[in-house]
Length: 274
Image (cartoon, rainbow, N blue to C red; front, side, top):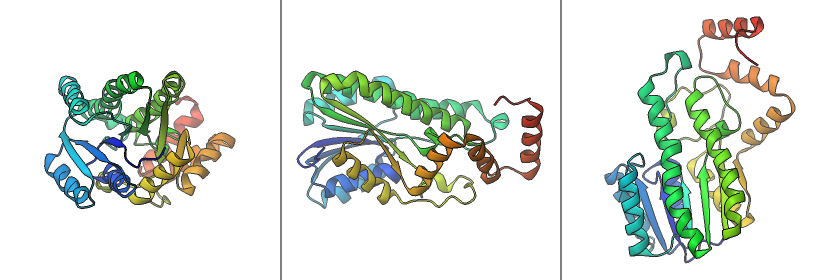
């Protein structure tokens, strides 16, 4: 896909990967960018950066969990700005905790934003793309959408679901000339992950590298875009020796030594399913 002269809508555009994608699309010659996030002030700051490049931009302060508001906003955006050629679903939240200590409100928020919010806005935009028989949808998953890890159960579940959702849509929407792509970055240095306990030995990538990988993948028409050598290594290890990767992840996870030993004993005793 050549973004030059096209209109793109990016969710989660106020910071992190979403912001980086918005900026790189502006540099690539996008005609118009529609930026979606909950933080209106941050959105305005990103919009100002993009306007300085000579690109038209509009902000849509939205909570993707509010279905009616999202419906109204997308209908107005399509009416006011015309066809959306590229949708990038980047909005997401992560709460890190051992599963037994997880809090239901945090679990519900991850599912509401990461999965249901993406589903809602994709449904609205894809129907309009199908009517015009043109469009590209990028769903930002994660390496944890391929390889799950301790302390990130709900986050991994939503990211696995995004990969499956993307694969299903790719087949369904191809007849309407709509491409559906999964972007799977590894640990990325963003505001969100700085609040998390990082896994040992994982070297974070930058938001700029993730955005550049997306642009390269769009040009190559890649169905899935893995970002970074660690992502490729982890995926191949999971295919060839999943038991080895599981052990590495357990050692690398930010769990106490006591919890790691207890987990191993439960595994050996068969109390935790394989």
